[in-house]
Image (cartoon, rainbow over all chains, first blue to last red; front, side):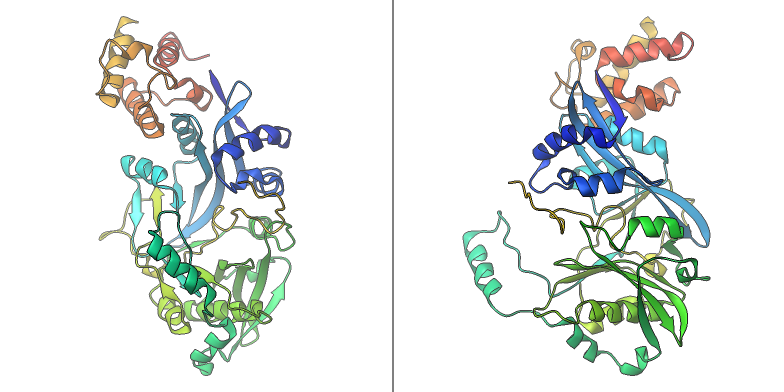
Length: 345
Length: 82
């Protein structure tokens, strides 16, 4: 018979053995990430399904505070959901639901969505991934002619330096906005009022844990947004080989969109090659600003799915005034990590 | 207790319609290849509805075989799971 236990660092050797079976470069293989994200904090735990001395499944549960129409909404976000033995995912899923039935999936595997659909979760429409300088990736399933074409294309100069993209924007639209890089979140960074019907609205403690700026395995850059000299919000950039707009918030949507572009420009200031950039947005006023900058929206939505939402508004949920950032849960915390020296095959 | 077994077989039969009723009491995730995570969740949801219980967190790992689930339900019926 198995047992579900909460991960503690003394179990890392067992977890690593399981992670080796989970797939190449699986995040749970990397101890600095695992121990930081899943232990020693008030928000995020990892549960292991143990059978004798082996880990046969895992699920991480990140407790996140959102605001929906001005009301607090505590939800859980599942991470590292993995079943190595048939059926192990069921008890782990129920463990997640017992912790809080109000839950979010943002992204997720096809197996996860089979479960979500069967359990009648609510799919939110309109959350797009916006990409700039999208890398050309050769997939194992590509036919030979396409793979060859992609390899040739990979050799050609491609993309636009982010700083050059800013020239596409009207200067008067962002002339009153400046940024100041910070190392810590403070209360005054959190917007006092919000134009967003839905957004992540955690405490400063959560932000200082989740987007800590001096971690070894991921590099977060935090920028204070100043509008006419007064603080209007913040932007966090995940500064890796692919840039990601990790988390952001402000008291006005247009200011936030331009501040995001300024933050990206600042982070890329010394880049020699155009770096890929990704962000997510469902906001009808922010999306055209990102598109004008050069971002291309995904054709398909990125799955954004809820369980246990309050009663649905008449006509369904309208995400066009929502602020949906990419790096929620473990979305920006994936192997290979910046300090990872031991990629597994 | 016979009633519990009968109702549990109904739950299993609804979740695994391709398995004969005679085989269900021996079913476990180790012996039934089609017992994947989705079926596992479906089974737990059906059992909660059928028996009017909310499976406590500390019992979730029991839900990997017919015998263990039956054992849990019998303990529950006998005055609460220990």
